[in-house]
Amino acid sequence: MKLGYSTWGMPTVPIDTAISHLAGLGYDGIELTIIPRFTTELSTLDAAERKRIASLLKQHNLALPAIAAHSSLLETDPDAHEKNMWRLKGGVDLAVELAQGDELPAVNTTPGGKPEDWDRNKERLAERLGELVDYGASRGVTIAMEPHIGAIIDTPAKVLELLKIVDSPYLKVNFDISHFDIVGMPTEETVAALAPVSAHTHVKDQRGIAPDFEFLIPGEGTFDYVGYLKEMQTHGYDGFITAEVSFMVQAREDYDPLAAATLSYQTLSNAFTEAGIERG
Image (spheres, rainbow, N blue to C red):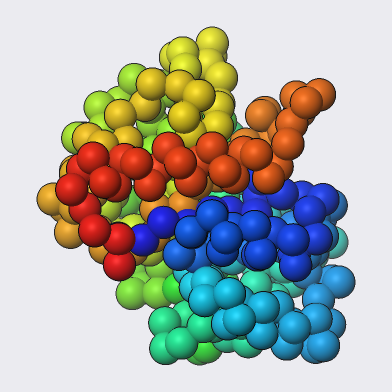
């Protein structure tokens, strides 16, 4: 396994600064965020900027395991849905252009919707996701669906059912264990279910049980990263463990994106060492 950081926690940080800081800390790779209000929003990435980012990643020896293109697949407004599909398919094209080596980045997304919509809307979700997955497959890029608290897919069972419905090797999971930890699901249970079908991961820290919970920066809470890493290894996962800082944390008046990346690295690199797992 390797250690990554998502620029989700760095919406206003120039990509040059982000890459330099993360490489200097010792991260193995980054997840690039391309949604609105980010310095790397997709529409701002012209050909020259894409070439420059690829060069920066190579210069700093950072892998690009994933692209965060999170856009709802359940918008009812046709124009909004078209815009979301443009971003998601554009993420696929970007993955091909920015790939650092033979392995293409996964394109991560959340599904949208609400938990109670599952029975009514799962076929619509599968149809729209199938279109995206087919596009990804045509370019060799995996789509990674993230189960998320409050979304239509909020349990391991639902995402596993969706994988069966769509039935493509180019559809995997972006496994963010925090969304299960805050509802009291045991690490052993969720890792056993999702590690074998995951293309990428997120980790945060957290406290409390939904609806009374709080997402935190890795190291601010008590999540057992050592036990988690050992479980992921046991169940055959060998990809990136990527730290993500939530919008909940970013809303703090004193939020410092570079300091958050530093604390995350210290916490997770120490967990790798304590778990006896050699990165890479």
